[in-house]
Length: 315
Ligand SMILES: NC(=O)c1ccc[n+]([C@@H]2O[C@H](COP(=O)([O-])OP(=O)(O)OC[C@H]3O[C@@H](n4cnc5c(N)ncnc54)[C@H](OP(=O)(O)O)[C@@H]3O)[C@@H](O)[C@H]2O)c1
Image 1 (cartoon, rainbow, N blue to C red):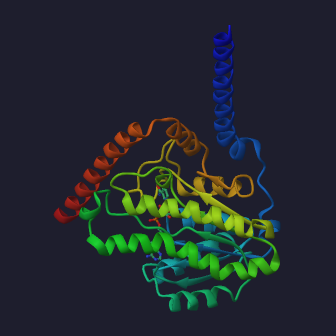
Image 2 (image 1 turned 60 degrees about the vertical axis):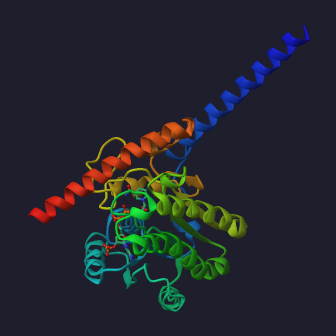
Image 3 (image 1 turned 135 degrees about the vertical axis):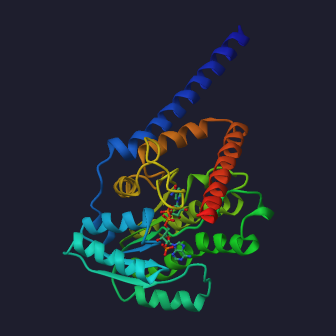
């Protein structure tokens, strides 16, 4: 009899556990993307300027346009002057009611003195939103010692992915703290959710982003400042190899619009509903299956990158 009660109790606990996880997964997928209304970004930001790093292409450019559409002045930060000028022009053509400024900075430069100069420039305006988007990936995934570009590439990927959200947040937070308002979004990656073989520094640096954002939320969350980590899967940008768009691979415009709507509704999410679906499925799988899928997709990325390189050489 005792054994029967024990078995029934264990069964009930197991069912509750499964039910809890099912509800959690469902809420992660539907909560920020279906059930929630976008918050009033202007009110939560508390100031009219949005700073976006890596703002001349892909996700960062799309965030800049979408924030301009929502009435924010945009401070673009990227490395190529001509692309910054062009992006500024394009934003103003579409949204003449906002102001746009830009600063050139190559984020492979880790110098604190140069960061300070950039921060002094940025802090001349009242910043309500900081989108730490700039990021760098390898030419293609490979084991650590065979990464194209060797230790220079490894150093650049680590520096570009880790320093900007750390130092720009530290330098811009004082004005947000004094206002008791502000929003900081750090763009990580689903590649930071599991240790991905052949993605080493990229995967680890994206884990850093999630961890940093979570600690900052604990330090400043009670002061009215929102911290959000966005962990996308595949978005159709240059970094991703400009793939065709699909159900699981949105344009950067569709992605940025969706991700901006999740601010204040989720502190850590992929940014796009079909990505969230993929992410939750991935989390349900045993790690060895994910490992196999990563190895397979990394080999495909390597092949595609090498084929592109050869094509370029022949043309
Ligand atoms: N695309 C995806 O599938 C995907 C998935 C997960 C996470 N993410 C993350 O999303 C973020 C944006 O990626 P993306 O795909 O939009 O990239 P992207 O299309 O390649 O655009 C990168 C942007 O960053 C700038 N940039 C690159 N290196 C820089 C440097 N050293 N200094 C200053 N600016 C630099 C580029 O400027 P220039 O044009 O002047 O080079 C460009 O504006 C990254 O953090 C990435 O890790 C992307």
